[in-house]
Image (cartoon, rainbow, N blue to C red; front, side, top):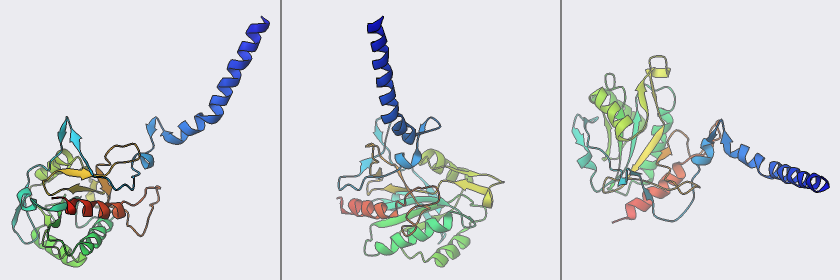
Length: 243
């Protein structure tokens, strides 16, 4: 009995030590049963090659698309061959994140003015209102000067399919939402061969998208999410340098 008594004491002591050391760490990493997003979306400042986005064993390539731009010209994914470009989904009457996203894109545009092989593909999720004329005025208002920056409109279902299925960037018409739509404020980065690329997070996984709704100057938003415009600029430079 005396031996069993000491065994119980040692087991209790080990459990106590485990609780003191490891449980707080687990709590820090887990919220409501899932890994905290701010951890998952943090990025390494590495100098290595950017990762490919792999789905079912295949590198994820930009799907085919064809829409009308702000100059009433037909633009397809083939117009971006040989170019590094960013993809966003937005709408001109967005009262929340779109202005920040497009100010960030203009800032990026201005940093890469010497590169003819850099561009942006912006797709409106409110094509009924966002006609080529409206998109043209919007482009002029924000200072869009890059000839490879197309603000595109067209069939609404086609655009939603491109966002949700083609890029897996959420976009939907939600009547009760501000402006009538909801969408993710993310940018997708595409290389010269049409493959989606990104750097990896602290766990070695591709981050897939870059936060577009936090300015580089802001640094961190109200939810504790860090800006990624700075790292996005670094990664654009890496892809521009690829053959």
